[in-house]
Image 1 (cartoon, one colour):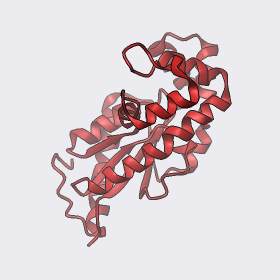
Image 2 (cartoon, one colour; image 1 turned 120 degrees about the vertical axis):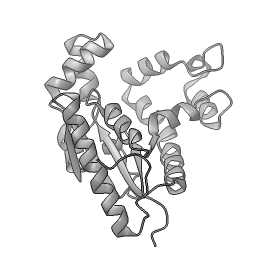
Image 3 (cartoon, rainbow, N blue to C red; image 1 turned 180 degrees about the vertical axis):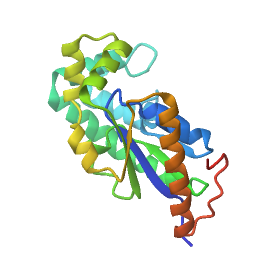
Length: 214
C-alpha cells in the first residue's frame, strides 16, 4: 500500500487560468494546496520568514500594520533581479517544505498542488505528476492587460519575467489548453480527475475522493 496520496502539481504562466483549473479539481472533492496562499501565511506579522525579509530588505518593506508592503516589494524586485533572487531564496525553500508536509498528510486518493513557479524551482522532484495549463503568449498578454489594467509593454515584461512556455511544457505529463470556453475546461479537468483516480487505485490508494468522477 502506497503511503500518502498521489501528488499532482498544476502550473502555468500568468493569465493561463490555473485558478479556474484548480477550482474544478476542488469541486470534485480533491484537496488543493496553493503555494500563493502558503506564501501569504509565511509573511504574516510575527512569522519568522517575514522577519528574515525585514532583515534583508529593511524596515521600509513593512507597512504600519506589520504586514508586508506588497507594492513596495513588487517594485523592488521588479527593478532589481538580485533582489528578486534573494526574495525567492528566502521564500521558496520554506514554501516547498510546507507544501510537501501538507501533501503527505492529505487524505483522499490524490492531492493537487497549485505551484505557479514550478518551472522556476527545482524543489519539487517529489511530485508524481505535472499538469501544465497552457495558452499562447498572445492570449496571456490580452488576459493580463484586461485583468490588471496594464498596457502591452507592461504585460509583456511580466510574461518575460517568468519561465518560458517551452520550459513549462517540458515539465508536463498532462497539458490543458485553456483557450476555449468553460465547458471545454470542465471536460478537460473531468478527464484528468478520472485518470488520477485510476492511477491512484493502481498505486494502492483507495480511490475514494468525494465528488464525482464524471
